[in-house]
Length: 344
Ligand SMILES: *Cc1c(COP(=O)(O)O)cnc(C)c1O
Image (tube, rainbow, N blue to C red; front, side, top):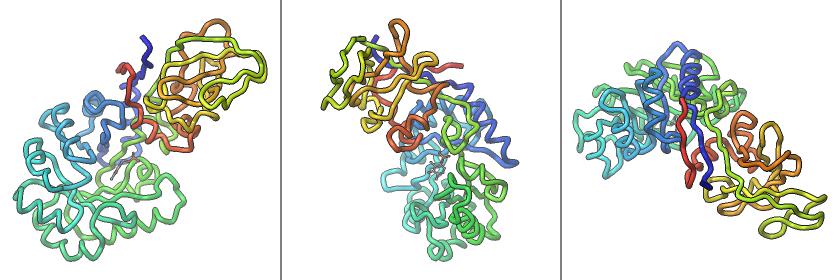
C-alpha cells in the first residue's frame, strides 16, 4: 500500500477539550467546522460529546446536517453563517441554530421558520460576520423579545495576547450586550487563553482541540507517516526532482515518499521541510510534486520503510511554518489519499 497513514489520537482530542474546559469556569463548546478541521467530523464530534461537549459549532448548514447524523438529537448545533436563502429546510430537519448575522437574515428567519431557535452574531471589530453596532441597536429589542439562544462575537487577534484589538473588542462586545438576557460567547481557543474577562458564558474552541497553536500545551492529535516507495544513491552533483532545484553536495541516498501537494502537503514548503525517521531528522530534497517527495535519507541507517512528517517530533504548526502558513491550513488540507486510523 502506497498511501500515507494519518493517525488521529481521539484520546488526545478529548484530553485537549478537557484541558481547555478546565481553563474556565463556564461551559465549553466545540467547533467542528470543515469536517472537524479536516480530521473527520463524525469520530471527532462523537469523541468530544463523550468528553462532555454539549454545544457544537459549524460554518454552514450542510455541515450541521452531517453533524446531526453523527451526534443524534441531543447536542445543540449552531451555524456561524446564519440563515441563508436555501437553508430553511436543512435548519428545520436537522434542528440547527443559525447565528443571525444581519437584519436581512433576521427577516429571512422569522418569515421562513417562525419560532425556530436562533442566536445572534455581533461584529465587535473584526468586520467579518455579525451585526454592526448601529444595525444591532435598531434590531435589539425585537430580537431579544424572541429569546435568542446565544449572543456571540469573534476576536480578530486573540492569538496575539498583547494586541490592542483584544481589549477593544472585549469592550465593544460588553457594551453591545450590556443588560441583555441571553448567554454570551466571545472566546475561541485564543480567547480562552486571554483569561476570564473573555470567557462570558460559553467558549468556542477549535484549533486547540486538534493540537494546534495558540494552545501551546495541547497534546498532539495528528501523526502522519508516509511510505517510502524507492531509495536510490545519487552522486555528488546529481540533481533531484522537478526543475532540478536540489543538487547533491556529497554522495547521497534519496528516498521517494508517496504523498505530495495533492494530499495537502503544500508545495511551497519544499526547501525548508524535514521529516523524521525515528529520531533522525531528514530534509526534503527538491520540489514537492503532486504525489511524491524526495527526501535526503543519507543519515538514516538501513532502508527506511516510512518517514514521519507530523507527530511527536514535529507539530502541525512546525510543518505549517515550513511554508509560512498556519496549522489550521495544514490540518484542513489533509485530504486526498490518506488511510485514516482513529486511535483510542
Ligand atoms: C473557527 C471559529 C472558532 C474557533 O476558532 P479557533 O481559533 O480554531 O479556536 C470560533 N468562533 C468562530 C466564529 C470561528 O469562525
